[in-house]
Length: 201
View 1 (cartoon, rainbow, N blue to C red):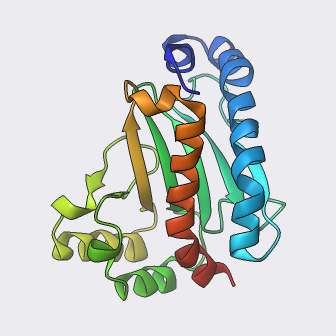
View 2: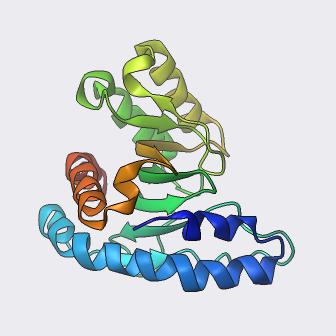
View 3: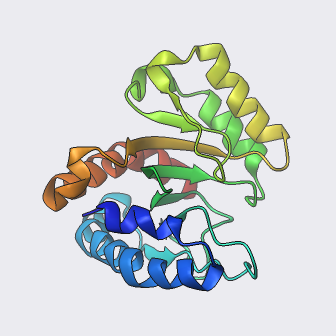
């Protein structure tokens, strides 16, 4: 599904050139992913969900370092709500449940997440505190105190995010097997659905 062709898009230097590659080589894959996982995800959540594909409309000079699709219950936009993502940088693919800084009720969500034992529930998942950076921590290798600290920062620092899910290196063999990758997305979203549902219903 994702090959060197998609990752090489981020080697294009200019904004127009990179956006052309994103539109032709990556965004059609996002629609295919949504067509496969969207109906089951919607059934699991129990409310209508909508696909949002990043447009990078605010960019006028610098080309984007990553791109993504987001699934959310709000047809008009996703950034102010918890949302499920699939996207990629030049060296990895990410599958996230994302809570980003534009959300109006970050403090309440942070407190809710702090009541959940993420370490035992999602040991094989990654967590991150900035959706614009690649860095992420494997939950099983992260102390409970550090997880709580990351959530506290999310709730109190205006520009802080919180993401939980999976990251895969660009050379992971599963990325080239469409059926296997879609099964992984379904599994990841399936495990995150109860958390998403708790926070949007």
